[in-house]
Image 1: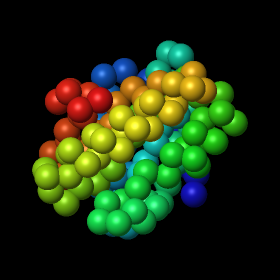
Image 2 (image 1 turned 90 degrees about the horizontal axis):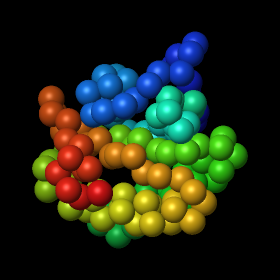
Image 3 (image 1 turned 90 degrees about the vertical axis):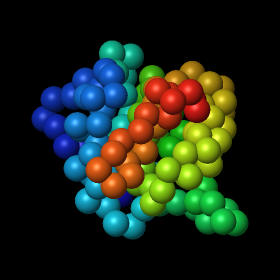
Image 4 (image 1 turned 60 degrees about the horizontal axis):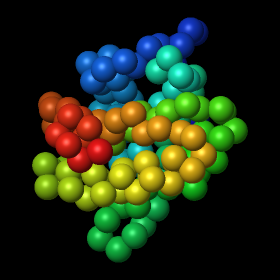
Length: 132
């Protein structure tokens, strides 16, 4: 399912701007999944989409193929990811999945700008804590 919530592109420079833009979507989404803001070279959101998780053992796998397919179709320069979390212990797993996506994204000239993890009333930037 795809969404675009602004009549003009919203600039997502910095954690606070990204958190303010993505929080209403992520916090209101009880089904989990991954929210991705596709951004242009000026970090303006050109498209916002929710991608369901792909089962992968005990972890929820990041649907990298769908995300990168959209990135190529949209001409995205970067991606800002956001996802809900039930605990702080998911940081390492989400960090690993996001780093894998970042490595693959490089092959199509797309940068993973950040991944915001929403836990309760808190928001953690995986880039900010050194996991990206």
